[in-house]
Image 1: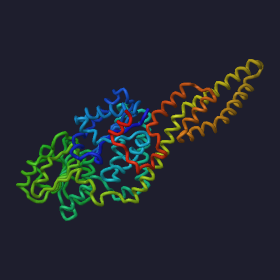
Image 2: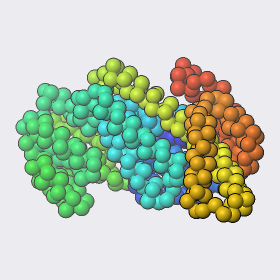
Image 3: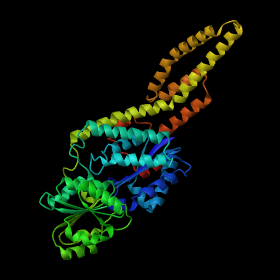
Length: 460
């Protein structure tokens, strides 16, 4: 089996395309299940955020897995495959592990160092677990990634400034009002995680009036109570536009929440500066809103490469060093799992030899009492366990070595172990051979990853 990632993000695609491929929770859950219908996919997890859609899969064949995952993703998003593939990236085996660790640590985020991705990965894992699409491989990977992400945020200052997409967007909004939002009025559309964060940051920045508009009134009232705001009906949203200075929208709607006509009507009643912040994918607000006089519209595309928005270079370097160490440790653990069938087979063979000798002892010494027989049995098992301890430990250590499979194969042949054990090892070794040729893949960043098309051409 091969660990595979097929994804598209803000690094490879324009916001307009990310807008079209955005998957809300039900669609992401269906995609996970649909992936398992492929003959090549054994496990799946879909990570869908405001700036990426990634599919993590355990596949039986690399080439077939990439093709199947891409076709199913195209079908789920409604974007033709030929339009999608130029923006896709593929990672496999060690690079797949490294990529997920970097993503979960916030190193691959639009705003480097943001913490929301931790919750998003946790949510994606729970979704895959609930749908029974995550097996041992995906579970182990995601759990490790969450642990690494927490360590990065705890051990470095990557999020020291509290950087997030929301805080960066509101800093840009504040610049339209002389650098501060103190005393301003704001309207937040939505009551989910991003909207809740936006409302909290607005309150911290000194906004004196916060209106919460949400489709479910009870959720809107709950958020309003937390930030000292007031809940309003979503249908009354246009009526309140003329009373606020900032609008932040981040809903799971598939249609527009706010149109240029809505804002234009509000402008006829109040021509003061208005900033509309759209943090949703698909977008909540009409793009032409930004063309209206006195109105600034910010969306996810506005946040890319914002000067000073990201963590310091030193903290990023520390975070990358942690990720590199953790990837090596995870790969070593994966390699140890691959030789586990050989280790189990060796111990089973030893147990059979001990039991055979004990049986022969009982036949040759029928008069031996139970206490003596038990002591002999304990001594034999203790001696065998001591003899096997070092070889089995060393086998797991050597598994991470490029020649680790050869050591396991030699052990199998020396002790004539279970053929199924070596078959399992061989299958795992063949699956991981797609990364052969890189002495240390974690330090080969100077060699760019091949494109989607190059990967398929090289493996057909």
